[in-house]
Image (cartoon, rainbow, N blue to C red; front, side, top):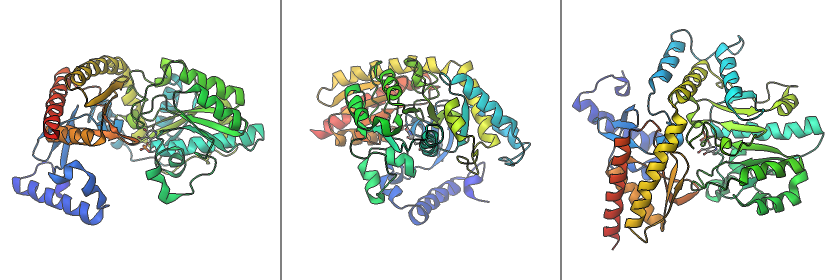
Length: 439
Ligand code: PLP
């Protein structure tokens, strides 16, 4: 039996597992991981998760403020979600593809109920990038089929992150992730099609040039990987109005902001904006089984009805994934996770702002929404050292992908107040130590 699958490990087995894991990473996975993961230096191997904590094989707890890049809103192994998946496994595996699956239908109905406006029809996928790729195809298909127009431009925003699959990567604005793979999808992120985020004048200027050729506008309601940038209340409604003026579809990417991370079930609720296409992933199934979704309104689905197989893939919409998602949404509603996210987030922001005041010249800004907080350091190096220092103090964090000067703090919303206060103390201690060393 593989050591990694044993229930209990002896001390010797733990040491063997650590050595083997390190060797397997070096020899059989991209060796670059070993150079870039903080856990590689100290050879920390994960073993189990519970609530806001991840434990290594020696049962050392880490407070997880990264939450799998936003997946574990409900913490690690939320019991109702695990129970739902196990109950499916007692009957079947993924799904047959040919027979109708009740869970697929139930989840689609639930998503129609909880998503804003007239969003109603769901396509399932396995990750955020895939759902965004499908959204790009759907938008082009809509204009070709319904409007008989050849629109292939997708207007995006500077510093956006939409994933690393081909279409999603095209819409992502991080050159270092893209330049080796050019050319990407035509019509996306080309000169004259990228607007400044949170700047309606800039967006209107872009649309004045390309609006009538634009299939969709792709926007995050809060730029997560761009550095946790929360726009003004006017921004998203303004984008909606300008999309309507040019007949462009509005695609809101709630892959990271959705499912209570930002203090509402969906971030669009803050401004009552109703997109034509919404993409969801990350926290959708409680971190227990991968599933993501592209949800569209009637006019978009009508265009896609001619061939329902355009946007499917083999593993999407599996029974365990749908069951996990139904149970996760139910838990979010029953336990008021959105409200918890707002309350705990407000507390954490105010404590971090106090620390910023205690160490002038080090922290440029503390900002966020819900329990999704960015700390912007004056220098990238200082931020990296803080992240490393926190790791040494058993707190997991990372910088935002497009803005390495910003450290994200996005723990599971089920984190206890004591754990949150402990994060604050460890953060203060780390900033003090890094500042002292920098002198
Ligand atoms: N869209 C947004 C807004 C994201 O933040 C991410 C990932 O961080 C993605 C899409 C890509 O999701 P995935 O990594 O599941 O492909």
